Image 1 (tube, rainbow, N blue to C red):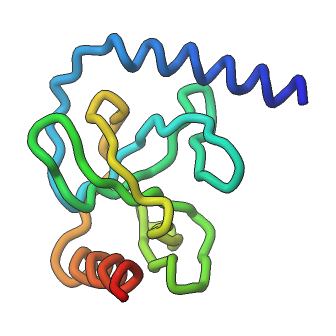
Image 2 (cartoon, rainbow, N blue to C red):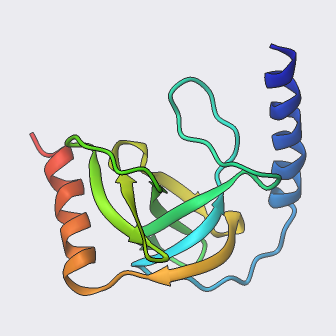
Length: 132
């Protein structure tokens, strides 16, 4: 329990720094970025390392400051809420049910860009998951 509290406190320090950042980062739909998504609770996806990062796909851009992103994992997962994604040549999965809104202040470094059919397939999988 103490270890979890200390990890969470480390995240709070990183988050304070992110909140005070002035970001001029320019991002586009289809790009994959290292993103400080934090230390979250329960089954929520979280970042790793000192900056609490993980790769995130920019699925939909909302102006210059925010976007809807899909967190990625290097593990191949099966199920309707996962979609196959290669990141830096490594096969993995996009975790569709963990998608959410992000501020560009969380972006740390661009990894690569997904285009064409690959991006269309991910968008379709997202829409299929959330359609009734």
